[in-house]
Length: 413
Image (cartoon, rainbow, N blue to C red):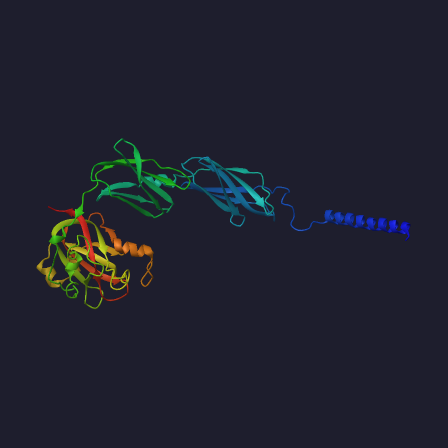
């Protein structure tokens, strides 16, 4: 073996490898492979075009220099000690900054950014938002007494997301929370029930999602007293024109208020008043035997022996309740609803939100067993006679059934 030649070949091979490595490194330096670096020269800043101030917010119109790499503008500003940021595309040329808790001057900083995430130097913009929504909504707040509780009413024209908090004072003068209402409705409504019918001091305030708070409305009110109506005084009346026929006992109108023998509360799950007239659009009429300002009621549907009638069959989905102090000869002769006072247009509540034919959820079944709760509108007049117009049932059918109705109100002695 020629040892000298062997060492020469090794040295030659090593030289070739070194040359290739150096050549590769040189090529790597001379031309970029893959995505360019994210770091580089910052883009030029945007220019302010104008500011449109709004309630608790402002729209900033901007322009950016001609630069193919700039893809957007970011605004940063402070809300209650928290830095907020909003981005907008260069194709929009505007962005909205919001969440300001008072009408004042605020600093906003605009920066353009490019596709490599490089940001420009900021420009300072002064915005002067108008009165914030929490204060505008607060100005519309009303707190009113209702039966066994209170009602809170407010207007939210821009449909902002807000929280209306209601608190009360305890015996020691300490505030405790009664209820929070989360809403973005234009006409907000909140109901607190279950309060004693004693004078109570309550406070109401509004908060938005940026933790801006309104002032606090403190008021003293007296919830109205109500009680269950005495069902032993209820009775049937001779059917009026427009009243539907009904099946024989135990499907007569008296089933609406009479529990089964030995039961103190509700009739059995399969008991019910049941019409026999074909065609929705007729009524059932009865005498409560007492004059009352109705406050609330619970409507109980016929459940069926295996819950097979829940939100289906002939249970009512839509109906209207009418009332009257008297049942005159003219009313008995004509049967016209024009001679009655419309008290309440009802749509049955279904927790699942399902429509006709939808399967029941466990919440649907539980709610039906508990009864469908309704509150009569404020200003409901005192009445003695009740007339219910059947408008739609849960099967798009032509019959109607009612397991029971339990009214509460102020009985006029």
